[in-house]
Length: 506
Image (cartoon, rainbow, N blue to C red; front, side):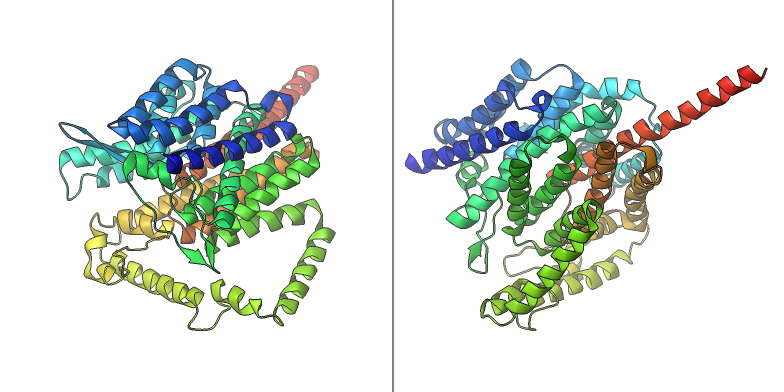
């Protein structure tokens, strides 16, 4: 009994501290209210306690989530989206195969929330703006339609429909709902504050797990799905996962949190608490020991320092170089080097990871070139890919670009990259016109640009699917809305001015 209650006590304590600190620094209009607290308490109490003693634990959890959302979820689209982004990082993936006589869907926490919170908004989202409203929409639809067609190859018709459903739930519905219902920068900030609060809580859990050497959500995963996560250590410390199932995905999400904290910085009220929130997010990324995401987080952090104060940036860089040089004289330097790629000796764990990733890249490209245009649904069964399976039987394919390439070929990879290139191009156009822009808007656009850049770098060592993919699609949708808010207004102002001058001339 105590092994089920004690984790819940720690989760509640960390949650209330995290949410209280957020409310202390968030603007009054963005503070987390009773609705957020209720969902946080109800979900965790159900997960840790009720599911441990009642039969059909996932059904119990599902019923509590369903009733809570039907009763308490706001009807207004923007608060509903904010609740969605708040809830997504709060619980483990909790994958469950839903059967209704026959296998139906594999439901995860993110898919469940998308169905209950965002799917009812989809018809209105489609009516609000044309399907090709934003420049990147054509790439979104092309990527979706390509993968929808490929979902039917080498499988049954029902499996193809299941694949299309997953595509819609994982990226198309979140993108369409956010890009159509968010209208201005105030809406964007409202949903980002909710997401930041949940990610700050996840960062607190990560730090606790590493220093306590205990995966806090392990009991909840066992209660609901029976799944166990194999604990992994580096430098003698536990790799944290927090509410996420995999260290790299946890680090990916918290790296996004660093960028969101930067984007909202002008609205945060108390600098010391804000700095503490950013420090916890950075520490949460570090204790996952996910090195690719360290680089992604470093890109976001260094870009913030460089744009905020270049002198401080160069001073900090010099201090870090001096510290690195001094560290070489201590024994701990060997331990640190052992986890840094391209730095340690050939027999270190980091060097082994780099070698495995190099083999994975080489083999994946060779396998992809056998079906270059549209990839293969069964690439993981290829003998060359089978040879890369580790002793545990895992094919550690943690590179989002390789996953897209192997699944949908170079056609899919080009469309995937084109979506983000289009989003970057819009942000660059806005930043070039930033001369007369208020500082808080300039900060938002810079943060969005470098956050997307850092996450796309981190995706080379992370499977950006499920919740981690949701971070990318939501930020892409937010970037599209934010850039339209600035560029068309200036264009309209120019047309109005020209029309006024023409009438005066006449």
